[in-house]
Length: 249
Image (cartoon, rainbow, N blue to C red; front, side, top):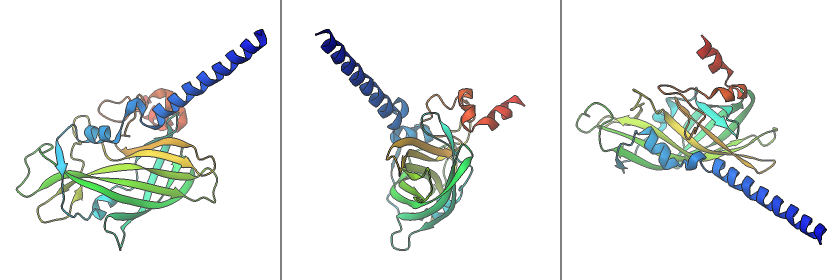
């Protein structure tokens, strides 16, 4: 009887441990501190109100303005993720799709090429100017896209990045939009933000993987900077050493 009770207790302990692990992973993978893409939009626009903008926009110039120098992380330990785009071209048959090529590195090594697409979700117009009054007919806004970026399956440690992205723009009357850091003042919230996951081809397991200009979306307690990005010192060893040297000067 005692052996049965011990065995039952052991099995229950295993089940509780599994539940705790699952809850932890779900919290991390699907938004640290329950961070969502809507939160990313609100953070990036500093809470400005907006509405759908139904004009047809050619986003190729906007998307090509910044193709490198992104800040990013991947996984539980916020390993440094660097994303570089080498080509972003509008699809000839579907103007809402942009064909993308580039490469990634993790902790400043293991370069992996990828190919994929940005697919337009929607355009939005801000209902109030970010700083200065707009000229009549001009607009400030942002566009949202879904993205999927597939690394080379033939190489080791490769997988698929996918998620949602937003980019801010400024549009003069009668012209196509230009990339614009509308809120690049005070405590800048950044721009061109990607919130998503990376899923391994081999294990099928997913890890959080996000990046952006100036700031990384849903950074939780990783980015402790006020007026600029500053990684928490506990994560320096995961590819962020240059920031330690930067602040030591």
